[in-house]
Image (cartoon, rainbow, N blue to C red; front, top):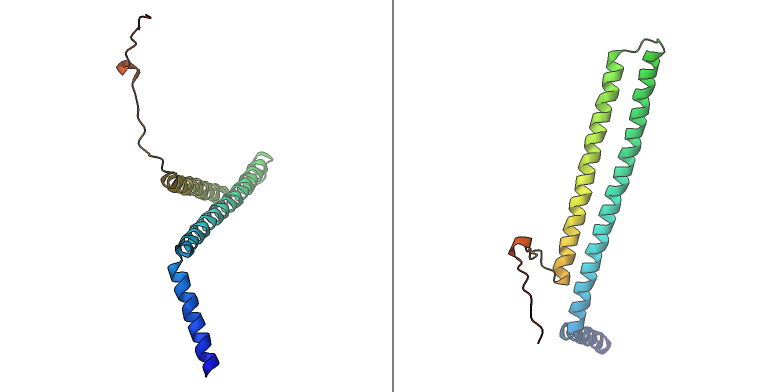
Length: 141
């Protein structure tokens, strides 16, 4: 039993040492911060890939609509439902693209604002109007 007590004592001692060491908490906080940044980067990358996929689908939808219109130009019978479905598909995909672009921009703005807070930057800038500036000549002595 003595060996088991030694193991428990050494584990307790190790835990107490970790609790006493402030560097461990800093390291843990930094690890969490880097994990969040990595997750944010992955999320932006995922949204960008989704955006590229939507743009590819939009290109194919335009191609499909163009083929339908060429068939009409060439004298073939094309139902209005086919053209309407192709146009609806384009409208839906364009809406998705707009949504994804806004979502990516908002996500980037959120990350930039977090970065500004970390770097100590203020969002309130001083703005001076040209009307408020007065130029005064100074005489040389």
